[in-house]
Length: 415
Figure 1 (cartoon, helix red, strand yellow):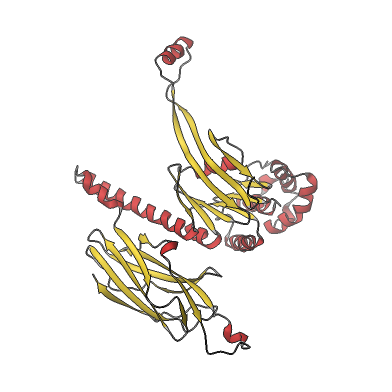
Figure 2: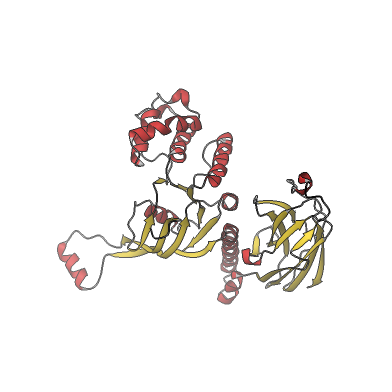
C-alpha cells in the first residue's frame, strides 16, 4: 500500500460472470459452435472499472439498488472473488461479515461455533480466547454457550453470529445488510457499538439500503449503479442521490404503466419523467458569521419542469455533532405549476452559540417524495457566535444542545 493512511484501495476493478445460453453434451456440436463463433454463454458484467479509496478510520458506506454490484464488490474486497481486471489493496487484518451465520454448524455448541467461526475469519485459538468473553457478553448468551446451536432460536443465532463479527479484533470490519438484526433492545446495543466504533479510529465498510444509517454513521460513501460509481464522497450527497434516483425510477415506472394502460406509444412523454425539478440553488443572504441577535436569511431557487406539486424543506445541522438543531418542513403553499421559483426564509438562532451549522435543502413532492436536493457544495455554512459575554463565562460560551423551536417565515419572491 503506497499511502500509509489508506486501508482499502480499489483501482479499475471489473468483474463479469459467464451465464450459459445453451447446453450440449456432444463434442461435435461444441466444435461446430466454436467454429461458428457461438460461445454457448453470455457475459454478465457486474462491475465496470470501479475505483475508490477507504481511508483508515473511515466509516464508509456502499449503497445501491439490488443488482447494482455491491455484494460482488464486497466479495472481491474480501478475496472471495477475483476481479477480471483491476486491483484491490488491503492494509490491515480484515473481518468480513457478508452473510449472517455462514459457517455455523447446528450440531456444535455455541462455544464451539465461536471458535470455528473465529478460525474461518483467520484468528488463532489464542486470539479467540482473548475475544471470547466480549463476544458472549455482547450476544447476552452466557447461559447458553454449551448448548447446541440447533436448540437456539433464530434470534439467538443472529445475535451470536453478529457478535462474533463485530467483536473480532480486526483492523477492517465489513458488514453487509446487517443493521436490522435482533430485537429492538439488541438493535439499540448495536447502534451504541457503531457510534463507539465511529469514534475509535477503526475502519468499517457498511453496505446498506438504509439512507438514515448512511447519514448517521458514515463519514464517506459511494453509490454503485449498474456496476459503475455514480456518486462518491459526502454521505449526505450519496444518500440523497440514491433517494432521488429511486424516486425518479418510481415516477418513471408509474408513467410507463399509465402509458401502457392507455396504449400510448409516445416515447417522448416517458422521457420527461427523468427530472421533475432542476437547477436547485441555495444562497445565503445574511453573513456567514452571525451573532445570536442577528436574523439568518437565505434564498432558494429552482425550476419545476412539470405541473406538479413541489415545495422546499430544510434543516440546519450541527457540523461537529452531526445532528440537526433546526428544521422547517411546514411550507404550506406548495407550487402546482411549472416555472422558475424563488423563495426566501428568515429566522432567529438566538438559542445557540459557538456553533457551526450546515444548511441542507431538499425539494419534496405531493407525497413527500424527494424531487431534488442541494449537494454539499451547495450547502452554506453558518457560524453563530456571541460578542456580549465575558471570556471567563464558559457556560455562556457553550452551544445549546437541544433543538430550536421553529420561528422563521417563508416569503415568495418569484414564481
